[in-house]
Amino acid sequence: MDMCAKPAVQSVPRDRRSRLRSLVLFLIALGFIASVIGGVLWWDDRPFAAIESHLQNEEFGRALTSINAYRRVQGSSTRLIILRARALTGLGRWQEAVQIFEQVGPDNAHAYRAFADALLHLEQWSAAEGVLQVLLELIGDEKDALHELTVCRIKLGRGDEALESAHRLAAISGSEGRGNVLIGKIHETQNNARLTIESWKRVLEIHPDAKGLQVTPGEFTAMYGSALLDGGQPEEAVSVLKWSVKTRPHAETFAMIGKACIQLNRKPEAVAAWKQAISLDRLNRESREELANAALQQSAPKEALDWLSPLIEGNVEHSSTAYILQRTYSLLKDEKLSSHWRQQVKELRFREDRSAAIEHSLIEAPNSFWSQYIRAHRFATAENWSEAALLVTSLLEDEPTIPLLQDLAAAIRTRGNPPSLDRLPIDQF
View 1 (cartoon, one colour):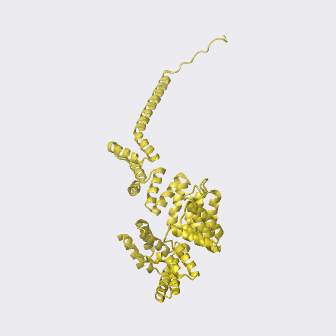
View 2 (cartoon, rainbow, N blue to C red):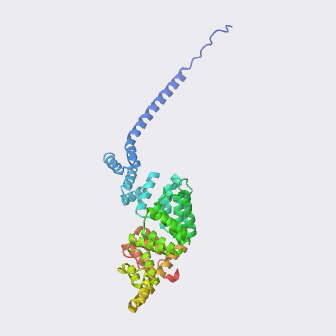
View 3 (tube, helix red, strand yellow):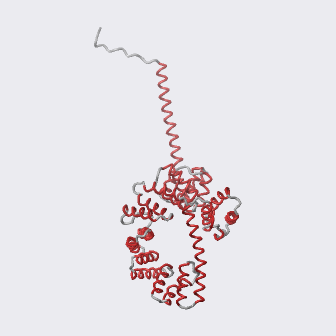
C-alpha cells in the first residue's frame, strides 16, 4: 500500500448541498429583512430622538414645536402625548401637563419626574408623594426625589415619614448636609430644640462654610442660631447669628442677636442690635417691644410710646405689645387708655392660648381628627382646594355628622371662606 497516496475525497450528497444552500439564502434574506426593518424603525424614531434631545437640553419650546409638527404629519400617539406633557411641564404649563399625565400615565422615569414636578408646582402634595414613590422605585434612592418626597410629607404633617425619607437622603454620598438640614427642620417643627441643634451642628461639620446646601449660608446660620437660642445656648447663638448677618443682614436675625445678648447681660450690644433691626424693618415688632421695655426700665414712658407708635398704626395682634402699652399708659397716668389696653391683653391672650393649643395638637397628635381638620382648614385658607378636599373627604367618611366639618366641606366645594377657627372645640384637643 502506497503510504504517500492521497485519501479519496468523499462527495457531499446532492440533497444535503441543496439544503445548505437554502439555509444560507434564508439567512441572507433574514438579515436583509432585519436591516430593512431596523432602518425603517430608525427612520421612524428619528423625530422622537430629536424631541428627547430637546427635552434633555431643556429646550422645551423647541420640543413642543417639534411635537406639534410631527402630530400634523403623522398623527398623535401615546408616546407623543407623554412627550408633550413633559414639554408643557418644562414650560410651566403645569395644569395642562398634569391633566395629560392623569389621562395616559407616565411611561418612564423621565415622565414620572416631569409629572412630579408639575404636581409640586401646583402644591398637590398627596399626589406628588405617590408619583415620587414610584419614581424612586424605578431609579433607586436619588437625592432630588428624596428631598421632594420629604417636603411633601412635611407639608402633609407626617413628621415620622418625613424623617424616614430625610435620613435616606442623608445616607447618599454627597447629600449628607442636605439631608441633615431637612432632619433638623423636621425636629424644629416638632419643637425638639435638642435634636434640631444636633442635626444642624452635623451640617456644619460636613459643610464648614455652610455652602452647597438647599439654602444660602446666611439663611442656614440664621436658622441654626435661632435653634441655639431656643435651646438655651445664647453665647453660641450670638456667634452664629453674627455670622449670618455678615452675608444676609436681616431684621429678624438682628432681633435674635439682641435677645441673646440680653440673656448674656450685654445690654448695650442688645440695644444696638434692636436698633439695627428697626433700620432694616421699621415694623419689626420684637425689637420695638424690647426697646420700649428698656425705656420703661429707665422710667421713660414717652420714649417707650415713641418706640411702640408704629406698631399701633394698624391693628395690634400680639398680647405682648398690648401689655407694654398698658404699662406705658399707666405710667403716663392715662387710666382710660391703660384700661383699654388691659382689656386688649385679655382678648389677645385668649386667642394666643387657642393658637397654642392648635399647634400643640398638630405636634403631639398629628393624626387626630381635629389635627387633620386644622390642616384641611389651612389648605382651604391657602386656596389649595385639592389637598383640602382630599383631607375633608377622608374625615367625612369617619365623622359625617359634625357640623363644623360639614361647613368646611361646603366652603371647599364653593371655593368660599372656611368657617372660623374660633368655633373649634379646644376642650376636646
